[in-house]
Structures are given as structure tokens and as C-alpha cells.
Amino acid sequence: MRELTLEAKIENVPTVLELVDEELEAYGCPMKEKLHIDIAVDEMFSNIALYAYRPGEGLATVRMEITEDPSAAVITFFDQGVPYDPLKKPDPDVTLSAEERQIGGLGIYMVKKSMDSMTYEYKDGQNILRIEKRFQKD
Image (cartoon, rainbow, N blue to C red; front, side, top):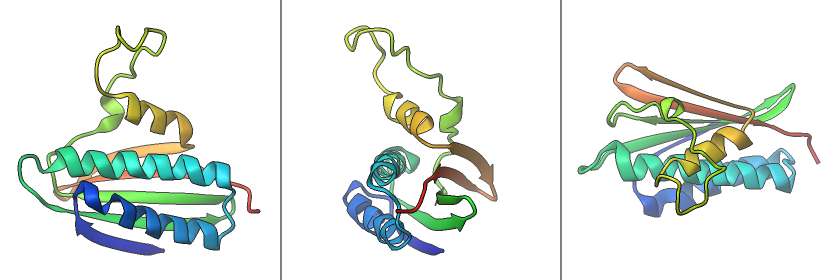
């Protein structure tokens, strides 16, 4: 398990992805699952950076774990920003054209659809969002 605490800023997304990718590569995660995980991590950390502390600033912690049986990447995001459960946001109507759809929510929807599990809780003054993606080792 590795953990990183840094300012919740968009410019820190590459640092978070570097942590995640190092662990995924060390455990032989296939490219397809790695790409899904990278997109999900980018989306979730970006949401924290853009909205959790608005208009102020704050810290976010990202914990990266790999489980063995089954092989899975488990990434947990912690922040002390405004309580927000992204799982309660209604899924966008993807049958509508882009012009007809409401703005927002597509990123979280994509994460929910591409991950094997996604959980949220607000505990001890912090948002805790966990995503999990199972994979077969290369």
C-alpha cells in the first residue's frame, strides 16, 4: 500500500497518476484495465481539486492498494472538503444527444460503469471515496 497527501489542485493529477501507474505496472496490470483506472483516478482527483474546497484550497490523500485474490487495484481518496456523495448524483440520460443532455455528471457515470465497485462515506469530517478494478495479471 502506498499513500500520498498533496494539495488538491488540477496540476497534481500527473503526480497521482504516477503513483497509481507505478503500482499497477509493478503488479502486472494489463493495459486495458490500467487505462480504465487512470481515467477514473483522473476524474475523481480532478473533481476533488475543482469542487471539494471551492473557493478555497485544501489537501487530498490518495491511497493505492493492490489485492492478491482476486487481483484488484483499490484506490481510496480522502479530503476534508464539502461533504459530497457522487454516487447519489443521477446518471445522465446517455440516450439523449450531447446537445439535449444536461451539463455535468458524465465523468462520474463513466467511472461507475468502468469500475467493479465504487463506494462513498463521510466519516470523521472527511469524504472517503473508494474505487476498485479487478484484473488478471499479465
